[in-house]
Length: 99
View 1 (cartoon, rainbow, N blue to C red):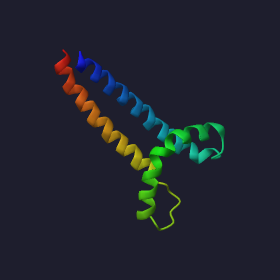
View 2: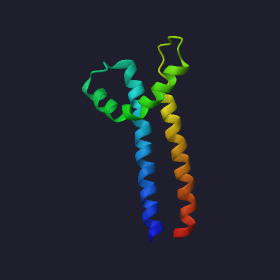
View 3: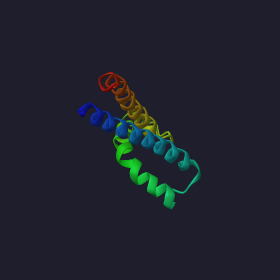
View 4: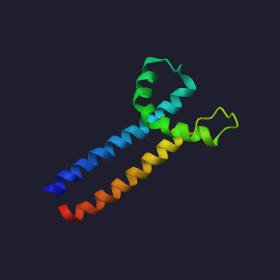
């Protein structure tokens, strides 16, 4: 019983992180075409920025050559995918306990 609840919680977290990683991609692509103050982009940025900003602080320290490329969304995307991989492996291991 407890494994099924835990499995459902991890599955929900996995789906949330999957949607969140797609929001990072969409925000990055929209930054090429839309004004930063467009309502759609502002809404997506409100969700994405709290996760991307710590990576932005890290990349600002390393990349000081003045390049106009923001690599923080890429690093945030990779970090989320690492967490998703760990959760996916946990889910696969938990299946043997449930069934």
